Structures are given as C-alpha cells and as structure tokens.
Image 1 (cartoon, rainbow, N blue to C red):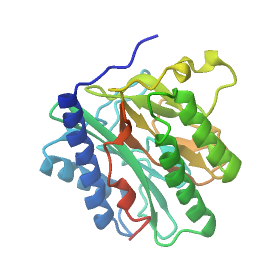
Image 2 (tube, rainbow, N blue to C red; image 1 turned 120 degrees about the horizontal axis):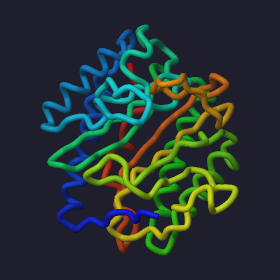
Image 3 (tube, one colour; image 1 turned 60 degrees about the vertical axis):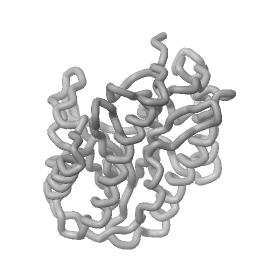
Length: 273
C-alpha cells in the first residue's frame, strides 16, 4: 500500500499559502454571487481571481481514464449535482432556492490547495438549512479526529455517526477525501463512511501520521447515498434527485493535532445573491 507523503515545516507553509489562495477565492466569490448568473459567468470569475492571486486551477484539463479533460476552472455543482459539475453542464441562470457547491483547486508555487463550500441563493428551505448545518458541523467534528493517536477510521466513524445517526441525512457512497501535496491526489483515500470489511478501505486502518496533508470532504444528500453519472461525463448526481451539500478543508496533521490550512472558510455566508 503506498504511504502518504510527509512534508517539512517549510513545505507546510507553502501548502498553507496555497490553501489560503483557495480561501480568498471563496471570499471574493461569495461577495460576487448573485441570482441570474450562469455557471459559465461564475467560472470566469474564478479564473480571473486565480490569475490575480498568481495561481492557476489544478482542475482545468484534469484527466481521469475514459473521461474528457475537465473543462472548467472550478467544480460548480447545483442542487442534486453533488460534485464535479462543469461550467457548461447547466446553462440556465441560477435562481432563488438553488444550492451551489463550489470546489476550488489551485496550484500556487508548486503546491496544491483544494477546498469546497456550499452556498444557497436566497434563504434555503428549513430542510436545506439543516442539511447545510449538518455538513458544516460534520467536517468540524471529523477534523478534530485527525490526530496522531487515531486512524482514518476515527474520522469516518465520527462523521457517519453524526450525519446519519444524529441528523438523518445520507453520506454519499464511493466518494471521499484524499491526501495531496504537490499533486492533487495522493494516498491516503479518506472515506466518509465505515466500510463493511477492512478490505474495502485499507487506508482506514492507517495511523494519522504527523506531516500528512489531507483534503477531507463530507458529501451529504437528503434522500440517498447512491449516485448516478452519465458515461464519460463529469457531473455526479444523487440517484433520487434530492439536494446535496459538499464541504472540504485542507488539513495538516501535526504532533499537536490537526491544523486546518483552509482556516477562514467557516466565516463564509450560507446565503448569497
């Protein structure tokens, strides 16, 4: 099993700088978002912001087998689209009641920053408000478990027991967080749910080693943890069409516990527009 990379203190500060480029992009974006905008307009704003911050998108032209290169600067996913929404998959203007997940990934001085947050256009329904609160609290509780005396299973147990046990929502199966550094995806894979057997998620038993960078990201839906996705296309949707949220932090595991490199995201508004 590949081991996660261990970063030096100097590298950690470079990773922090990249993560803060993501935070600043979200801050500017939250002030920019308005009803009537299209995903294409929002993606162009992200591109201009990244250029101003002297970084570039690590998502644009990203490839996975049998799928075209990712065509957008950010992942823009609306309502039942959970993740990997492109700037062109939805062409109508955004309106009251829409729930937009924005995942921003950057390369800054050779290091990756990668974090997502969820925004409601206008006041959300009571159910969606609870869903958003559940997402924010689940990542807060989960991050606290990323300390050297734990394994990644402790993250999953904490997040799953809160989301599904206390809140009554559903964590999306088959998707999760990941290590990162100079590359967008590195070991370990960080599942949000406890596997049925150790063979399903070998990284779950790995200790949280100091010096490891992880991007952790609960993806939560109202009605189901199952997904649907068109063949050879990027966006992933809830199987039943129910609303979903996505929250993601970059975290450095240290001897003293987790250090959230994307600190500041928690201050973002829930409602925009």
